[in-house]
Length: 171
Image 1 (cartoon, helix red, strand yellow):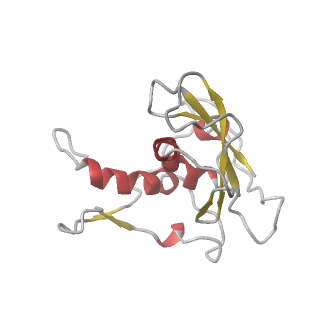
Image 2 (cartoon, helix red, strand yellow):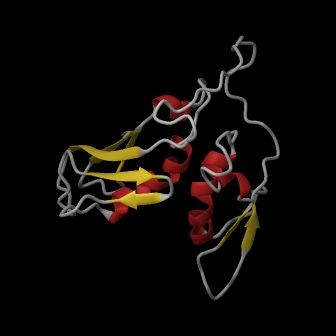
């Protein structure tokens, strides 16, 4: 974004889930997912159709300067040689306050390919889901050993009264 510029909050909401994986190298087979072909996103406002072009302008440095880092070795998903996308579980790890959605430790959702599954008879807080959604497309993929997201798997719900900690893990 140019200095002094701005972007609509609702448009940014559509862009964020795409930016996280697009700033990384997409390595999965084209049959496994659609992220390799995504170059545009649109604002969710149906009255004002604004389309954004997403392009990588430079590679992000994954390590501090003057540090010798061995080249990344592609690792296949051990669950399937033909599939690189990981199935993920988003688990309520702890509730440190009063969760108005009444989520409890152990509650979870599953992400398989591009689909979110909520176990029968359970629910999942919309705001907690909103907090974790931008990270899921990147966490499904192989991450460089120096990528901060490789080790960081916890997200906090935006409701400070609930203090709900979510953990993203392979399913």
